Length: 252
Length: 40
Image (cartoon, each protein chain N blue to C red):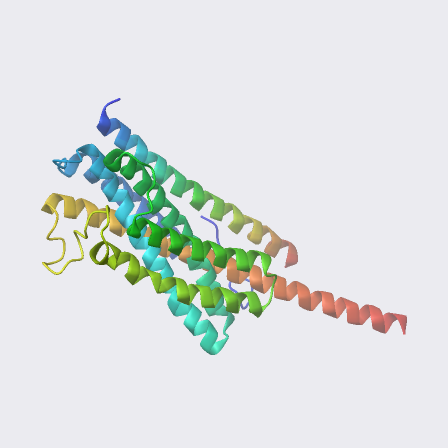
């Protein structure tokens, strides 16, 4: 596992890195989750084995929401305080959220092909999820092409806040509008997980835990990398200015 | 192909992809580390 410099001193850390530990723990839980999804959880009556995609689709969507929740909080923090650390955290979480939301959309599409006979349909749940993915991709593009400085960070923060407002809409889209997408089976008024067989719920929760651990580890890794790259760039800029000043003094 | 085998391969692809993402981040980390060593 890569090590990352302390942003103040630019010192490389020694010894155990919690991010590496979490990645390995998430990997181990993923193996258990894969076993539970394929062999432990019972086969669903109507969808048969295609339903097992659920054990990747739901955790990926959950981590996408969690990541964009972090983006929301950090974006507010950045707009409020203008602290660069909030901006870096929002950037790191946006990247990971886009990866996991892409996974949720692709796995949902494969499931849709088996269940509905089509890879994609403009169903309310699918459309609102696509909007969410699109908003955060745009936010990454703003950061990539907006150049360095706080202006692209501010634009991305506004997108991060606006995008998050789509998440309750995604959750309620299957209730509010006529949708092909299955209704919620985990978070519902009848009780947590009441729409699922207990073994299915257990398999789902193990996979959710694996994905969540992986998110936390990836977030830690990416944020630290960005902070180190930032500190390095600042140091180079300082050096460039110092050298420029010395060169000017030398010519006098 | 047995549907369970297909499902298992599907899961392996997903986790393989995520593992590739971790490796990519690892590579970025090593690049930053090399730059830091050069600077110090």
